[in-house]
Length: 338
Image (cartoon, rainbow, N blue to C red; front, top):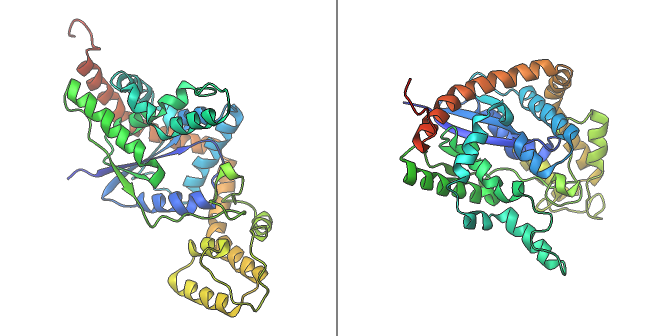
């Protein structure tokens, strides 16, 4: 029985933070050790170009993200860990898929619609002002990422389900025209995935500049945790853990027994400063061993590059013969047989 393929991409535009770790990286690392599946994890550096025009940032983010996954124990024997740009067949497939994708489908993409709506709210602006073809057509690139390896399952958040639906639509259209070549991927929605709040109480996100980077040194980690906003309740006053940023983050790291104990301390009126210390210790205990490995990996970029190249070779062992099959399907083949 062949293994089920599960695929996840990580856009290389920033430094991994606690929200990324609890919501996506930690579950994916655990999944990489599952012998029943073959996970594909890739650095989505072509996708990064849509959002970021700073070359140094894209390159540094690629280093930091790769180092993060390796430091946290990604099983690179079972998983295929590669950089998107090291698999050129993905871009070739993107063009093949573009040629069967309806423009109307792209018009309905959430990111494009949101950008148009923002322009229309600004008086006198062209609806397409500032919108690049990268932003408009990126769902096709995303479909190519998925379909290149005939991924069975793609873990996504609720706001990303449309990407998988579009990949299915595009794959179905290609299959209808050229015969059955693609598996239709399924979105896997984890309702239990942790969504952490940031320093200001909103969702932890680079967009809000409210993140806590995953591998900050101890002193800086403590300083950031101390910046987390709380209400004005005094020590000794009972506090409600629900909706509390500190408790929400703690919940992502604690076991059920620890959670029950901290709930009791909230009821007793734990001081915010004391809770921040508890949270710091809990996070630091889990992260510290990997932080040392991460710092060592940042000083060994050649090792990281070797791991990515090994992953790319595994990926291309699949993509090279498959793109040849697809070329023949669409009629791009030698005129005379060999």
